[in-house]
Amino acid sequence: MRKPLISLVVPVFNEEDSLPLFYPAVRQVIDPLANSYDFEFVFTDNHSSDRTPVLLKELAGQDSRIRAFRFSRNFGYQRSILTAYLQCNGDAAIQLDCDLQDPPELITRFLEEWSNGSDVVYGIRKSRLESARWTAARKVFYWLVDVLSEDPIPRDAGDFRLISRRVIEELRRIDEPRPYLRGTIATMGFNQKGIDYARQARVVGSSKFSFYDNIMLALDGMINQSVVPLRMATYVGLTVAALTVLASIGYIIAYFLTGFRAPAGFTTITVLILGSLGINAMLLGIIGEYLGRMYLQMKNRSISIIERELHDDADLRKR
Image 1 (cartoon, rainbow, N blue to C red):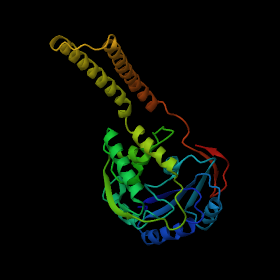
Image 2 (spheres, rainbow, N blue to C red):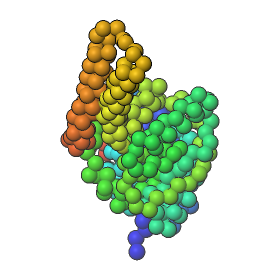
Image 3 (spheres, rainbow, N blue to C red):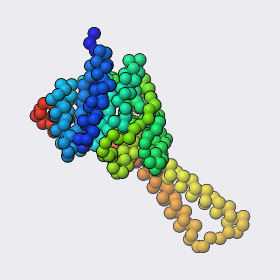
Protein backbone atom coordinates (compact mmCIF):
# COMPACT_ATOMS: atom_id res chain seq x y z
CA MET A 1 0.00 0.00 0.00
CA ARG A 2 1.20 3.51 -0.82
CA LYS A 3 2.09 5.89 1.95
CA PRO A 4 -0.43 8.67 2.67
CA LEU A 5 0.50 12.00 1.09
CA ILE A 6 0.43 14.96 3.48
CA SER A 7 0.27 18.47 2.03
CA LEU A 8 1.86 21.28 4.01
CA VAL A 9 0.07 24.44 2.86
CA VAL A 10 1.90 27.67 3.61
CA PRO A 11 0.56 31.16 2.76
CA VAL A 12 3.36 33.72 2.50
CA PHE A 13 3.66 37.47 2.06
CA ASN A 14 7.01 39.26 2.28
CA GLU A 15 8.67 36.44 4.23
CA GLU A 16 12.22 36.64 2.86
CA ASP A 17 13.60 36.63 6.42
CA SER A 18 11.40 33.78 7.67
CA LEU A 19 11.65 31.32 4.78
CA PRO A 20 15.33 30.35 5.34
CA LEU A 21 14.42 29.43 8.94
CA PHE A 22 11.01 27.90 8.27
CA TYR A 23 11.98 25.30 5.66
CA PRO A 24 14.75 23.55 7.66
CA ALA A 25 12.62 23.69 10.85
CA VAL A 26 9.80 21.81 9.11
CA ARG A 27 12.21 19.40 7.42
CA GLN A 28 13.58 18.52 10.86
CA VAL A 29 10.08 17.38 11.88
CA ILE A 30 8.92 15.60 8.72
CA ASP A 31 12.12 13.81 7.69
CA PRO A 32 11.88 11.24 10.54
CA LEU A 33 8.30 10.51 9.37
CA ALA A 34 9.40 9.58 5.83
CA ASN A 35 8.83 5.87 6.43
CA SER A 36 5.16 6.43 7.17
CA TYR A 37 4.18 9.45 5.06
CA ASP A 38 5.03 11.27 1.86
CA PHE A 39 4.99 15.07 2.01
CA GLU A 40 4.53 17.98 -0.36
CA PHE A 41 4.79 21.73 0.23
CA VAL A 42 2.23 24.09 -1.31
CA PHE A 43 3.21 27.74 -0.97
CA THR A 44 0.84 30.54 -2.01
CA ASP A 45 2.58 33.88 -2.42
CA ASN A 46 0.25 36.86 -1.96
CA HIS A 47 2.16 38.99 -4.47
CA SER A 48 5.15 39.67 -2.20
CA SER A 49 7.23 42.76 -2.95
CA ASP A 50 10.49 41.40 -1.50
CA ARG A 51 12.65 38.39 -2.45
CA THR A 52 10.08 35.81 -1.31
CA PRO A 53 9.26 34.61 -4.89
CA VAL A 54 12.96 34.24 -5.68
CA LEU A 55 13.54 32.19 -2.53
CA LEU A 56 10.53 30.00 -3.26
CA LYS A 57 11.81 29.31 -6.76
CA GLU A 58 15.22 28.41 -5.35
CA LEU A 59 13.69 26.06 -2.79
CA ALA A 60 11.55 24.42 -5.48
CA GLY A 61 14.74 23.83 -7.46
CA GLN A 62 16.28 22.06 -4.47
CA ASP A 63 13.23 20.06 -3.39
CA SER A 64 10.87 18.53 -5.98
CA ARG A 65 8.17 18.25 -3.33
CA ILE A 66 7.71 22.04 -3.33
CA ARG A 67 5.08 23.78 -5.43
CA ALA A 68 4.69 27.54 -5.19
CA PHE A 69 1.99 29.77 -6.70
CA ARG A 70 2.31 33.54 -7.02
CA PHE A 71 -0.91 35.58 -7.10
CA SER A 72 -1.54 38.48 -9.48
CA ARG A 73 -2.20 40.69 -6.45
CA ASN A 74 -2.72 40.42 -2.71
CA PHE A 75 -5.98 38.52 -2.28
CA GLY A 76 -5.79 38.29 1.49
CA TYR A 77 -4.78 35.68 4.03
CA GLN A 78 -7.93 33.54 4.02
CA ARG A 79 -8.12 33.30 0.24
CA SER A 80 -4.45 32.38 0.17
CA ILE A 81 -5.05 29.46 2.52
CA LEU A 82 -8.13 28.30 0.61
CA THR A 83 -6.29 28.40 -2.72
CA ALA A 84 -3.50 26.29 -1.22
CA TYR A 85 -6.06 23.74 -0.01
CA LEU A 86 -7.60 23.54 -3.47
CA GLN A 87 -4.19 23.15 -5.14
CA CYS A 88 -2.87 20.44 -2.84
CA ASN A 89 -2.89 16.73 -3.68
CA GLY A 90 -2.62 15.26 -0.20
CA ASP A 91 -4.82 12.78 1.62
CA ALA A 92 -4.68 15.43 4.36
CA ALA A 93 -3.42 19.00 4.51
CA ILE A 94 -1.76 20.89 7.36
CA GLN A 95 -1.72 24.69 7.31
CA LEU A 96 1.44 26.34 8.65
CA ASP A 97 2.50 29.96 8.93
CA CYS A 98 6.02 30.89 7.90
CA ASP A 99 6.74 32.83 11.11
CA LEU A 100 7.05 29.62 13.20
CA GLN A 101 4.67 30.92 15.86
CA ASP A 102 2.74 27.67 15.46
CA PRO A 103 5.24 24.91 16.32
CA PRO A 104 5.91 22.46 13.46
CA GLU A 105 6.50 19.80 16.14
CA LEU A 106 2.71 19.47 16.44
CA ILE A 107 2.60 17.98 12.93
CA THR A 108 3.32 14.59 14.46
CA ARG A 109 0.46 14.94 16.94
CA PHE A 110 -1.92 16.13 14.22
CA LEU A 111 -1.08 13.08 12.12
CA GLU A 112 -1.67 10.76 15.06
CA GLU A 113 -5.15 12.17 15.61
CA TRP A 114 -5.88 11.97 11.88
CA SER A 115 -4.77 8.32 11.84
CA ASN A 116 -7.17 7.73 14.75
CA GLY A 117 -10.11 8.97 12.69
CA SER A 118 -10.25 12.75 13.07
CA ASP A 119 -11.07 14.69 9.90
CA VAL A 120 -10.14 18.04 11.47
CA VAL A 121 -7.40 18.57 14.04
CA TYR A 122 -6.92 22.17 15.12
CA GLY A 123 -4.62 23.93 17.54
CA ILE A 124 -6.06 25.82 20.51
CA ARG A 125 -3.90 28.72 21.63
CA LYS A 126 -3.83 28.43 25.41
CA SER A 127 -1.24 31.17 25.67
CA ARG A 128 0.44 33.63 23.33
CA LEU A 129 3.10 36.28 23.67
CA GLU A 130 1.26 39.53 22.98
CA SER A 131 0.03 42.63 24.79
CA ALA A 132 -2.85 42.49 27.25
CA ARG A 133 -4.81 44.81 24.94
CA TRP A 134 -4.68 42.36 22.03
CA THR A 135 -5.45 39.41 24.30
CA ALA A 136 -8.58 41.15 25.62
CA ALA A 137 -9.63 42.14 22.08
CA ARG A 138 -9.28 38.54 20.87
CA LYS A 139 -11.34 37.21 23.76
CA VAL A 140 -14.13 39.67 22.95
CA PHE A 141 -13.95 38.71 19.27
CA TYR A 142 -14.17 34.96 19.90
CA TRP A 143 -17.03 35.56 22.34
CA LEU A 144 -18.96 37.61 19.77
CA VAL A 145 -18.43 35.05 17.01
CA ASP A 146 -19.58 32.27 19.35
CA VAL A 147 -22.69 34.22 20.38
CA LEU A 148 -23.66 35.29 16.86
CA SER A 149 -22.88 32.03 15.10
CA GLU A 150 -25.67 29.53 14.61
CA ASP A 151 -23.11 26.72 14.99
CA PRO A 152 -20.46 26.29 17.72
CA ILE A 153 -17.05 27.77 16.82
CA PRO A 154 -13.95 26.65 18.78
CA ARG A 155 -12.58 29.54 20.83
CA ASP A 156 -8.90 30.52 20.60
CA ALA A 157 -8.49 28.34 17.49
CA GLY A 158 -6.76 29.89 14.49
CA ASP A 159 -5.89 28.47 11.08
CA PHE A 160 -3.21 26.07 12.36
CA ARG A 161 -4.98 22.81 11.56
CA LEU A 162 -5.06 19.51 9.71
CA ILE A 163 -8.00 18.69 7.45
CA SER A 164 -8.70 15.44 5.64
CA ARG A 165 -9.32 15.03 1.93
CA ARG A 166 -13.06 14.78 2.63
CA VAL A 167 -13.01 18.27 4.12
CA ILE A 168 -10.90 19.61 1.23
CA GLU A 169 -13.44 18.30 -1.27
CA GLU A 170 -16.22 20.03 0.66
CA LEU A 171 -14.24 23.26 0.52
CA ARG A 172 -14.37 23.04 -3.29
CA ARG A 173 -18.09 23.72 -2.99
CA ILE A 174 -17.47 26.99 -1.15
CA ASP A 175 -18.15 30.01 -3.33
CA GLU A 176 -17.44 33.00 -1.08
CA PRO A 177 -15.32 36.01 -2.07
CA ARG A 178 -14.40 36.63 1.58
CA PRO A 179 -14.11 33.15 3.14
CA TYR A 180 -13.70 32.67 6.88
CA LEU A 181 -12.20 29.19 7.03
CA ARG A 182 -12.13 28.82 10.79
CA GLY A 183 -15.89 29.11 10.92
CA THR A 184 -16.63 27.29 7.66
CA ILE A 185 -14.60 24.21 8.62
CA ALA A 186 -15.95 24.22 12.17
CA THR A 187 -19.55 24.14 10.89
CA MET A 188 -18.95 21.24 8.50
CA GLY A 189 -19.12 18.72 11.28
CA PHE A 190 -17.13 15.49 10.88
CA ASN A 191 -14.90 14.27 13.70
CA GLN A 192 -12.97 17.29 15.01
CA LYS A 193 -10.27 17.37 17.68
CA GLY A 194 -8.64 20.34 19.42
CA ILE A 195 -5.07 20.26 20.77
CA ASP A 196 -3.77 22.83 23.24
CA TYR A 197 -0.45 24.55 22.61
CA ALA A 198 1.46 27.69 23.53
CA ARG A 199 1.92 30.10 20.65
CA GLN A 200 5.41 31.53 20.40
CA ALA A 201 6.66 34.93 19.28
CA ARG A 202 7.81 35.46 15.70
CA VAL A 203 11.37 34.30 15.13
CA VAL A 204 12.15 37.23 12.81
CA GLY A 205 10.30 40.15 11.27
CA SER A 206 6.94 41.57 12.24
CA SER A 207 3.33 40.62 11.60
CA LYS A 208 1.94 41.51 8.17
CA PHE A 209 -1.53 41.82 9.69
CA SER A 210 -2.43 45.48 10.23
CA PHE A 211 -5.09 46.72 12.64
CA TYR A 212 -7.43 47.13 9.64
CA ASP A 213 -6.78 43.52 8.57
CA ASN A 214 -7.69 42.28 12.03
CA ILE A 215 -10.89 44.32 12.02
CA MET A 216 -11.89 42.97 8.59
CA LEU A 217 -11.15 39.39 9.71
CA ALA A 218 -13.34 39.96 12.76
CA LEU A 219 -16.17 41.27 10.56
CA ASP A 220 -15.83 38.29 8.23
CA GLY A 221 -16.03 35.98 11.22
CA MET A 222 -19.19 37.60 12.56
CA ILE A 223 -21.00 38.19 9.26
CA ASN A 224 -20.11 34.99 7.36
CA GLN A 225 -21.27 32.70 10.12
CA SER A 226 -24.71 34.10 10.77
CA VAL A 227 -27.56 36.40 9.81
CA VAL A 228 -28.09 37.28 13.47
CA PRO A 229 -26.77 40.86 12.94
CA LEU A 230 -29.57 41.35 10.41
CA ARG A 231 -32.13 39.97 12.85
CA MET A 232 -31.03 42.54 15.40
CA ALA A 233 -32.84 45.18 13.32
CA THR A 234 -36.04 43.19 13.66
CA TYR A 235 -35.56 42.77 17.41
CA VAL A 236 -34.83 46.46 17.88
CA GLY A 237 -37.90 47.40 15.85
CA LEU A 238 -40.15 45.09 17.84
CA THR A 239 -38.72 46.38 21.13
CA VAL A 240 -39.27 50.02 20.19
CA ALA A 241 -42.80 49.24 19.00
CA ALA A 242 -43.59 47.41 22.24
CA LEU A 243 -42.20 50.25 24.36
CA THR A 244 -44.26 52.74 22.36
CA VAL A 245 -47.45 50.76 23.02
CA LEU A 246 -46.63 50.48 26.74
CA ALA A 247 -45.87 54.20 26.95
CA SER A 248 -49.17 55.00 25.24
CA ILE A 249 -51.10 52.77 27.64
CA GLY A 250 -49.28 54.36 30.59
CA TYR A 251 -50.15 57.85 29.38
CA ILE A 252 -53.83 56.93 29.00
CA ILE A 253 -53.95 55.46 32.52
CA ALA A 254 -52.22 58.53 33.95
CA TYR A 255 -54.63 60.80 32.05
CA PHE A 256 -57.76 59.25 33.54
CA LEU A 257 -56.48 58.35 37.03
CA THR A 258 -54.24 61.27 37.96
CA GLY A 259 -55.33 63.96 35.53
CA PHE A 260 -51.83 64.21 34.04
CA ARG A 261 -51.75 66.52 31.02
CA ALA A 262 -48.80 66.69 28.61
CA PRO A 263 -48.24 69.79 26.46
CA ALA A 264 -50.62 69.93 23.51
CA GLY A 265 -49.44 67.68 20.66
CA PHE A 266 -46.42 66.34 22.56
CA THR A 267 -47.83 62.87 23.14
CA THR A 268 -49.17 62.46 19.63
CA ILE A 269 -45.90 63.49 17.98
CA THR A 270 -43.82 61.32 20.31
CA VAL A 271 -45.98 58.25 19.73
CA LEU A 272 -45.99 58.75 15.96
CA ILE A 273 -42.20 59.22 15.77
CA LEU A 274 -41.38 56.24 17.98
CA GLY A 275 -44.00 54.07 16.31
CA SER A 276 -42.71 54.94 12.83
CA LEU A 277 -39.11 54.25 13.83
CA GLY A 278 -40.07 50.89 15.28
CA ILE A 279 -42.11 49.84 12.25
CA ASN A 280 -39.43 50.97 9.81
CA ALA A 281 -36.70 49.12 11.68
CA MET A 282 -38.86 46.00 11.82
CA LEU A 283 -39.61 46.12 8.09
CA LEU A 284 -35.94 46.76 7.25
CA GLY A 285 -35.04 43.77 9.40
CA ILE A 286 -37.48 41.54 7.49
CA ILE A 287 -36.09 42.76 4.16
CA GLY A 288 -32.60 42.19 5.53
CA GLU A 289 -33.46 38.56 6.28
CA TYR A 290 -34.16 37.92 2.61
CA LEU A 291 -31.21 40.00 1.38
CA GLY A 292 -28.94 38.17 3.82
CA ARG A 293 -29.93 34.81 2.39
CA MET A 294 -29.48 36.06 -1.17
CA TYR A 295 -26.09 37.52 -0.19
CA LEU A 296 -24.94 34.19 1.25
CA GLN A 297 -26.10 32.25 -1.82
CA MET A 298 -25.01 34.48 -4.70
CA LYS A 299 -21.31 35.16 -3.98
CA ASN A 300 -19.46 33.93 -7.05
CA ARG A 301 -16.29 35.97 -7.53
CA SER A 302 -12.90 34.33 -8.08
CA ILE A 303 -11.11 33.15 -4.97
CA SER A 304 -7.74 34.19 -6.37
CA ILE A 305 -5.81 34.51 -9.64
CA ILE A 306 -2.54 32.63 -10.04
CA GLU A 307 -0.12 34.78 -11.97
CA ARG A 308 2.74 32.29 -12.11
CA GLU A 309 3.73 28.85 -10.86
CA LEU A 310 7.15 29.46 -9.36
CA HIS A 311 8.08 25.79 -9.30
CA ASP A 312 8.04 25.45 -13.08
CA ASP A 313 7.19 28.91 -14.50
CA ALA A 314 4.00 27.61 -16.11
CA ASP A 315 1.83 29.85 -18.24
CA LEU A 316 -0.63 32.20 -16.56
CA ARG A 317 -3.57 30.35 -15.18
CA LYS A 318 -6.74 31.59 -13.48
CA ARG A 319 -8.49 29.83 -10.64
